[in-house]
Image (cartoon, rainbow, N blue to C red; front, side):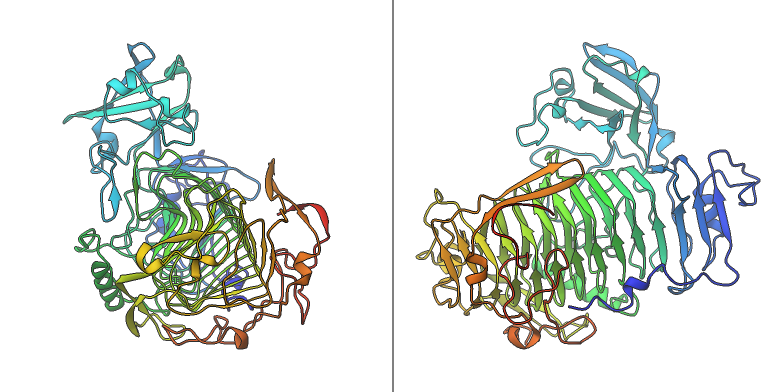
Length: 633
């Protein structure tokens, strides 16, 4: 399958002839001219002067400011580049250091922070709230506290700072006993924190002060590059698809950003957002599908089209420790690429919840590429929610995710999921139609569900226009050349489960689809260890007693997949997956093709190796060896 056109060229074009380079350093002076010998002291000062084609180079140090670019570039060739100086560590934080802690009781200390430090936004006074947010019966604030770089847990009671209790749902139960609580009056914000015997006046203690770190005040700041920074500590709000999605770094309803080689961490809600603008209808949907349909209608009137929005590249970033999403996008990620990112520890504290959480959560992934990302230790790794059309999800590594590796919700296709490693207990949760799943390794359950109560949009090919609305009756998928691994001790899965009555039926393999309204196209799949095929499937291999003994092992920055294989993969009756073979979806009535309209062929594997032209190997690896294997993935 060909890459999306033009996007891979971002950042490779020569700068405009009159381009300037502005320098920023902690040693800079306010009266500087921005030259290398006379740098600005803040990034924001350079941003006020930078014009299309210019570059802002930031030198080593920690900068505590919010960058709100006042303008963007005008094209790929005349973008504004914000970059860390090569080889230098540049940290930008939305926090400030708190000193002058006083002993309170036991291991608890108290600090009085003047409210003036927050300006008009005090993150310890406002609450996290919004559409589809679940507070779990207690208040939550976008503020945060950090001890030597590690986030502490907010508690709603001072008593739970004095006598902390481990949070039962947290993946770091010991860490959840390091707690903080805040009270606010007209003059001060009073912070209480349990430091477990440490003296906070001898340690680095920081608190969220700014809502965001790199985010324009207004939409339409196009063609910006953000390259090589460490961005941390933001008091971000809940970011549902019906409201403005403010992230620690975000594009704010723009076009053509490149967010590359950054470390993004410790956002109270979302790390990177490519979401919609804000308006008076934010968080007024009553948590309904009809409310989001109205959001789409208003967005279309407000410039939601390929000429104005999307075409972003988010690549080679490390994103962690955000309690809602690592990457979040409602409508703003059309025609974009998310590649080679490492995303982990999303929803790790687990103090609040909601229907908008995941490693990557996208509404309207139209002609969007999600490739080669490593996502683990989240609830849900990937969530394509509404309007995944022309979407390709390929060569991703997902493991240790407690909810599922991939949810595709109320989409009508066509979308393509190929060459992925889905290794969590639930690999796929699917409430859609018109999907093509090819050459994947499913190490967990497959959960299929129909959705008859929601009518959701589909589009003309390569377009944001709404062609119609329809519900999800179930089926109409293609499962070709995949490998499914079961668990023999699991309940016999589900030949007799009727999803029309049960709403949801999870199995190892494709038995969950036995009673789907529309048939599947299947072939060339291999089933191990109790995983069950689709009843009407031909050309599959079922090895009930064979156990490949899948394991993933982390060693430093690397992950290895350990498994044992015989000749099973090569005995499946596979054939190449192409536009012609995949046919046309029932709902959107569209065929499967590349984003540029050319025919597609899945002609390479997880590692990028060429596949056999007539009999490709089932699963993500072309022609693997047999026996005990250890593959760096």
